[in-house]
Image 1 (cartoon, one colour):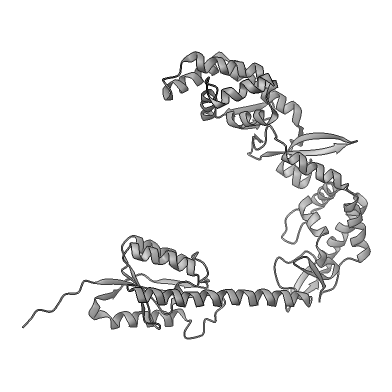
Image 2 (cartoon, rainbow, N blue to C red; image 1 turned 120 degrees about the vertical axis):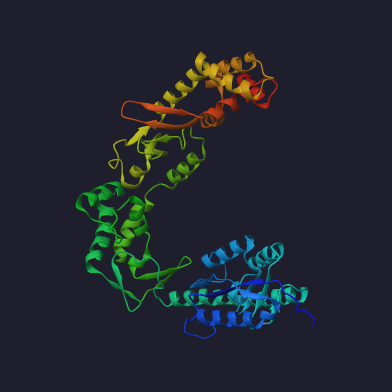
Length: 446
C-alpha cells in the first residue's frame, strides 16, 4: 500500500469589504456572508493543503477605490511578513475597484509568492490566464466606479440647479429640517449684524474685537476672525441662493439679508483699489529677509505683512493671531520690519568677524575638510562681513536663511539660534575657486 502524498499547508486569508454606499442587508454584500463563503471555499480545497488563518480582515464601510483601509493595510503587512500564502475574496471588486491599485497589489503578491482567488469568479492569479481575467474584470469594476461617480456629480449639479441644499458645513443662520435649510432667528440676527457692521464700522479688525468682547461666536462656538467675516460676506447662501461651480441658482430656502444689504457691503469691498491688492501680490514675491524665522516665546511664527499709508508702503512682522483677530490679539502686535532686520543683520556681521565664532567654524570645517587651510576659511568670512551691504537682497536673504535656525523675540530682546551646518556650508562656499566665492567677487565689483 502506497503512502499518502503530503501536501504543504497553504495559509489562506479571507478579505471582506462593504462600502458605505452599499446596503449592508443585501446577502451578497454582507460581511458575514462573504466570510462564510470564503471559509467554505477554503474548506473545499483542503486536499490542496488550504487552511484558514486565525485573523480576520474585514473592512466595513470603506470604498474599494483606494487602499486607505485598515484591514487591507494589515493584510498587506501580513503578506510581507510571510504569514499568508493565498488571499480569498467573495468577488474581485471586494479587494479593489482600481486597476492601478490592484496592479500594485499583484506586484506584492508575486514578490511574496502569494496567489489570489475569488469565490464566485473562479479566478486564480497563479496562472497567466487568471491574471488576464483579473485585469479584464478590474477594468469593468473601475469603469463602473467612474460612471457611478459621474452620476453622483450630475445628480448634485441638477439638485443645486433646482436650489436644493446638498449638505456640507451648515452656514450660520440656518438649521436643517427634512433636508431643507430653515432660518435660525437667533443666528440670523448675527448674520444681518455682520453685513450692517461692515458698512458702518468699515473695519473687520474692529468687528472681530467687538464680537470677542461681547462673546459673539460662530456656529461652531469659535471666536470670529477676519477671514470668517469675509467668507460670510461672499456667501450668497444668505441671499437665498445656491452656488455650484460659480453659477448661482435661486434656492429653496429663505434669504437672511436683502439685496440692498449685500450690495452695500460689496460696494465697500470694491472701493479697495485694485492696484493696491495687485501691489501687495507683487510685494509678496519679493525676498523677505526674516521670512519663517521670527517666533514669539510660545512658538507662534511672525509673518511679513504690508500696508500703505498716504501712498507710502510700510512693512511689518505680525503674529498669526494678530493677522486673524487684529493687532490687539497678542502682546507683540505688528513689529516694524526695518529695525528688526537691521538688528539681525548687525548680529550676522558681528558673528562673521568675531574671532571666537570664526574659530569655531574653522574647527568644524577642519574636521570634515582637512585639505583646507585656516586662511582659506577665515579671511573670506571676515571679508563677507564688510561687503554685506553690497550684496543683492536675494543673496542677503539666502545667507540669513542659511545661517539662522530661528529667532525668538522676548520682552527684553531677541535670541538668535544659529544653524551650525549652515555656517560650515558657507565657509566651504567662500573657499577661493568655488562658485560662491566667484559670485561674491562679482557682486562686489558690480
